[in-house]
Length: 382
Image 1 (cartoon, rainbow, N blue to C red):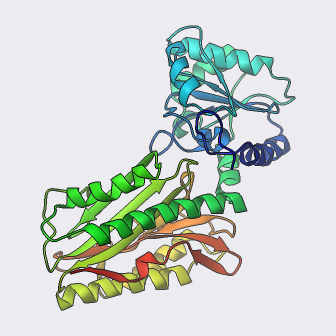
Image 2: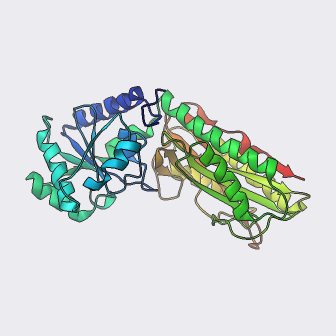
Image 3: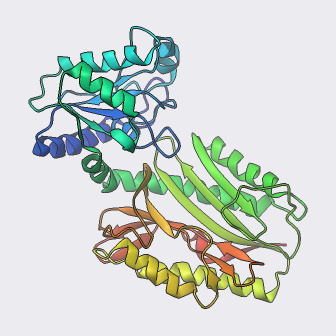
């Protein structure tokens, strides 16, 4: 992929492919330019990142996307010019408001919309309670002189959910980063180090590889999806390691594995094997066309004789978290062409032990393809 003068890795060919897919859907819906509010689970991913590529933390900025190439990012303030010019994506345009106020930013968005020649009325993505601040929403309606702004989030999210071969390669790159970081931990970890020290070892490797952000959990248990602590990792511990990471192109993946320190007791070893087997069995139930809620019920039955889950079973993943959520209340179908992270966990009935594993999958017509083989074995540190 070409690298521009400021080190941005995403290629123009990739962005044009995304723009073409999004424009086709928006044209079919009969709408004009779309206003995207830059938000996401971590503030720098989601639709804004998908349309414009990786760039500095854009939280609070706006993207105007229409029939013209490329989309335009409206920076939050005029004073951000130096940061965006040095570290932004040279493949997209940056516009700056006349002043630092929120109103000035919205007026700049309005100017860009008025200059577009798109035939349909303007719309928004992440409108109303979906991320666009309500006051901004109402002010934009006034500035644009329109009765309302149709929310196109669901259409753009669907475009983003279905992965191209380029998308899948990007996700595999992120998985390899996570695997390398886990391998470093197994090679260098030792009894007596703390959970925080272990997490720092993993995160430093991810940062060295260029990860703009990551979440790393290292837990001697019980693992309840909590942040690492000063607790030491001692001989006999069975450690849950979770790595969530996005590469420089913004592709987000999840990977979790189990690591034993020295000789591990039989009950915990048995729980580890059961947790891994639950992941293997769960992925076999990812049937294209079936509902995410059906998968959640299947996983329930897989673990009910051993304990109960401690946190969610999984969700769509790609650039930010995506639909569906593997839960009893989400009946969204699992569809070929999407990607999903599964992370079953088991808390024993007495509450003394809890373990979890995770993997990221590509959903195909006949089932799923795991993007890593790391979660399916228990690593040992002597």
